[in-house]
Length: 137
Image (cartoon, rainbow, N blue to C red; front, side):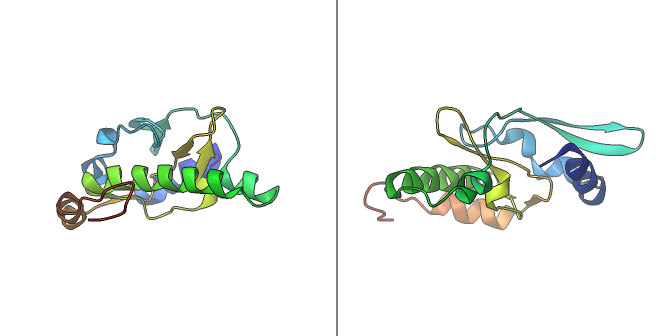
């Protein structure tokens, strides 16, 4: 997401309750670090980790991913979303353009600017445990 898009999204979506979403608690290797919500001249904006590399959208534009890479990236995105859901945070804007691929090939979920808080999601996530190998719950 470009700076102007981020500023626009934050201006539209960040009301007084925005800090209650709990974005600062999202500390996960596959989620871009969120350092804070700041305000300058009446415009709120997120301060995020700089993640170098192409977006998943950029990568997909060059052609399909190999199955092992597709599975690895898919698992990493799933783990990131699971971590967010365990904290009651719903991303609400997940798409290939909001996922960066780092130089070591890992995925980083970006842009929680439209995120919402849901205690119900947090409670449901806490009751579901899944074996990552077999998929058994």
